[in-house]
Length: 285
Length: 269
Image 1: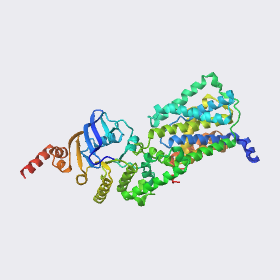
Image 2 (image 1 turned 90 degrees about the vertical axis):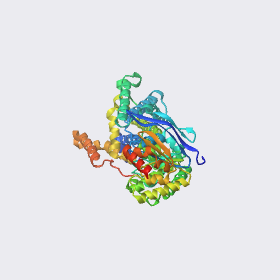
Image 3 (image 1 turned 60 degrees about the vertical axis):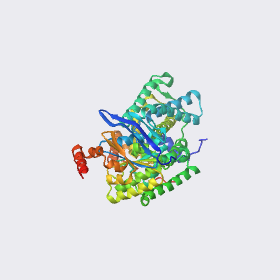
Image 4 (image 1 turned 180 degrees about the vertical axis):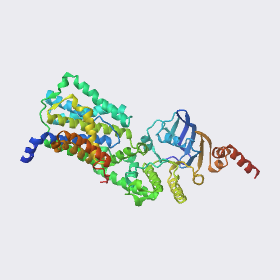
């Protein structure tokens, strides 16, 4: 089903730069996962945790049970979505930094759980995961997610999102189910993060408990901040730039990360709405 | 549809206590279906708090609310909007980054029944609903007189037009009861007169209107009934003519001494 033959030059290129190219696709999906909550004005930083749930779920299903890859991906979306549903109900009353702290806490709790559970590899993590996430799978799924979000943005769902982001109380009194949208957003966001986690596990072939903590959460946030959340294309661009940059800047050696940080600072100062900060028009039909 | 005269909204002993302050103190009154009812009172009388409780943004400390006989005291604001309560805010709260038309279409949200999935996938029903919503949106913009600005970004409208847009957005939800929080605030006399005409027109369609307003001329000319609040309590209620000469009302607005002098002058005249 996913056995598409790639042209030779692309094959060569992927052999040399595979992990970076795959990283572009996976990080773009993570950026979109962040977009779904930020587009509602919610600073939820649970994406890394949900990514971890997806990664562990998928790795265990593949390694221990030999479940077919498409089913693995579906499970890796459903489990984080369920977790988000359960966690969302008590935490969605929180806003701003309080929501950020509560969701960051989740990542830390899970890290400790992975670390101390032998069945999931403990501190050693899980290795030898077959590399099933090919180039067409990753980028095909990215495209599906991106198109889905673009369509949503240009429908009444997009209007509801923007209304909630601009003025929650006004959105409430015009009849928008703000609570339902918020819960839906965090569930969809978690499913996307879980998908990214599963894809990541199935090309890097190793996952460990420390990959889904605070640092990852902040990286995912920076994809969206850099690109902007006026359109789903923003976080995709942000993820591409921040993933490719360390490779492009390789000649700068140890100063690479300084440059990374500098670019984020400059964007925040000079392009506060992100690199793609324009207003996206919705049209009917 | 209720016939005129039956209460559309019943407010029963509504109380809201903030720490150390009784913002609204067991207020009860009824709003007749098809009427224009005003709530007046000096600043801090509890008018906006009352509105927030009716629209559901603020839970009452005590008391109950009934819409068309059914209790709505504990319902969330979006459910109340779906049941037919629309409102505007004292400090205009339109969605400034959207276009004017999108604002009105957002107000129709509770009336758009096609499922989210069908909308996103643009099924035929989804597209039809969207087209119908656009057409109705333009119609409402025409009704309030800003159809020429349909595609402008809402925040670029003039103050008076933003107020009109906010009314159009509230009408998008097809309300039975429209709550207007100081609709004429900051308007010049021409704009106020046009607003009065619009509200008369809306009443003509059977809409029930509850408004908070400071412009007395505007209120007296438009309303069937007035409820007066002061320090969170209802101090008077009746038709405009009775309220105008009510000593308690004059006292609330002008202070006891001025009120006594005025009443004395009137008595001797």
